[in-house]
Amino acid sequence: MRQSFGRRRSVVFMVMAAFAVLGCVLPAGSAAEPRAKNVIIMIADGCGYSHVDAASLYEYGRTGMQVYEGFPVRLGMSTFNHKGGYDPDKTWAKFSHASKSGATDSAAAATAMSSGVKSYNEAIGVNPDKVPVKHAIAYAEECGKSTGVITSVQFSHATPAGFSVHDANRSNYDAIARRMIYESPLEVIMGCGHPEYDNDGKRAARKDYQYVGGKTAWADLKDGTVMGADADGDGSKDPWTVIQDAADIRALMQGPAPARVIAIAKKRSTLQQKRSGNGKAGAFEVPFNGDVPTLAEMAAAAINVLDDDPDGFFLMIEGGAVDWASHDNQAGRLIEEQIDFNEAVTRVVQWVTENSSWQQTLLIVTSDHECGYLTGPDSGEKDGGPVWNPIVNNGPGKDPAVEWHSTSHTNSLVPFYCRGAGSDLFDRFADKTDPVRGRYMDNTCIFRGVMAAMGAPRPDPE
Ligand SMILES: [Zn+2]
Image 1 (tube, rainbow, N blue to C red):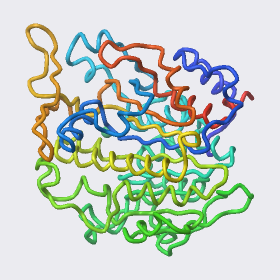
Image 2: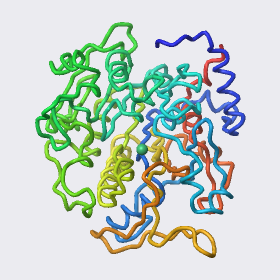
Image 3: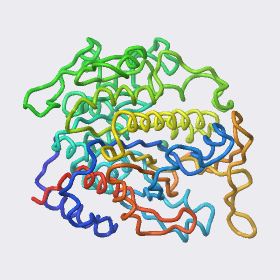
């Protein structure tokens, strides 16, 4: 890490102070007993309660059908950045409050979930003073676990970066990508960001190397192997196997796997959401891109690489383009992306039940913030007060009727679901109540709960 650690003492103090303020304190003694061998955190970027419902109505013609909606721990989660806050009374007193009260970006949200530290928008694993904070992945590595981050957008984008490396600014994609490739202890990196292909998978007229770490890094990656930092903790550098074709990613879903894999799908920025065609068309009306895996297939491949480690693994899986469809107010593509995410959750649940167990694995399904202020039709500030109408069902296979009220992020609570080893910890963190969403916790509690579940120590006391 480049930044000085001279201020570490004050960082630790700030971390402790932040936990005290947020009431996010570990139950005594829990940190000593590891419960979860494997930790899987799945994040639908930009997804709020209405996003889940919109996809469910399209898939099933009714809400409440997602596998994660049946998990034993179901809470709300606040997502604000270091300058923000969440006020339930104000949120539900005025329609525009959640969209006007300031909201986190994906960088600050990932940093909060990964390190327990609230920071500024654009912060990648650094505190408000731009000093690196330790990621849960770093603690997982100290517990001997294998680690990975995968996404349906560029692998160096805010959420995977905010779980694995440190940078003062999320837009430094090339430096972030190089840190992930050459300096991180990760065993798996998967996503888009291919320099030579556009969003339709055609050869790009202009190559763009930033998302893979620049031209020199791409020259390394293109060979199919590249030397990274030490991943297995034996003190020597470990090579990456680099793959690009969907068939090669799918081949990793079972059988023997390399120890370390970088998969860069042959698309510039997303697997599907940024493909050409009418962005406002209904879900699945515009033909899908070929030669890319689904998020479910990438998740299965990532787990197959990681699950050889007898100490277990830590994996972050992001449905990154739920957010992008929401910024663009594309209801059809939002539904496609949320369904892609839902199918990835189903695949992971299947892996847990068939290849692991809920005594061994902790699975978290959540979001980093809401995007688009999505509601049902005819919502808004009315004469009698604010109205939030539900999404209107048009039956399975048909786009439900929705209404967007923002092209940006909002400060709304997001849903949090979890099941498995240590999941009860999160229930204990939810000490506040929202009149509409019920009990909720803060996003920093993900770090605290995951640390306790892994049996990792509290943040370094020195
Ligand atoms: Zn966004």
